[in-house]
Length: 319
Ligand SMILES: *Cc1c(COP(=O)(O)O)cnc(C)c1O
Image (cartoon, rainbow, N blue to C red; front, side, top):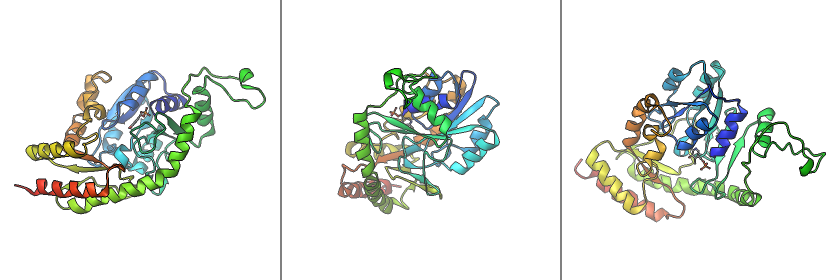
């Protein structure tokens, strides 16, 4: 996924001196890839949908902005029409980071297919996996050609010649995925619909039981979620602590709150300027009020039912 972002940014012509806007609720990979191509990462806040804030995005655009990377975080799409319109108006390209929402849709279309380019990760922790690996999607043949060549030492795979005598036009690198991994990926792909269906059943158990008890992450109107994470808000400090302690003993709390430092730009002092860090405080505050329950197929529906009952008890106690 990280390599896919880098290759896509190169295909889109991102160079030193350019700015690339991405969001504060994210994974370090997008910022790493922006730095890797020599561009400047600009951090945009998320709003309470936990995805890119349209208003903040508008404020962050300058003459140097070359690409916007919205990231569909934890299974749910950003309101893409708004982002695409802002980009179009300013003649900026959109690269969808769809590592965390493989199979999710926006207006009935698969995420990763709506921007100029889209990227996926098949890392071990993602919805479908090849151990390590990723993919780039685009329907622009020029961009497609660049990506294919760049990730394979510049090989043009010219049909008229054997590989050893292949033609070359650009200096590339080696970001090839092995064919053995691709075979695993093809089989994984056939399981995607089953995974999404089972996710939803588990998610709905929590939703039914906790609706009205807590504020659950709202899924935007045009967004079809993959239901791989159940997110809810607990503002009161002691209650939050109690809920997190309970979940940690039973199922974990995924990015929020377990791995928040890897997923919020506010903590990335090793990569970002003070100004970008300061800009991300708003996102940090939103994220800190949220808790995420991972939806896992290896956990039974009965387990989610038990968790929801105990959670309800904790949440309703002395409130
Ligand atoms: C996992 C992830 C990546 C990186 O993918 P890798 O395949 O692990 O390199 C990039 N962006 C987001 C949002 C991710 O969750």
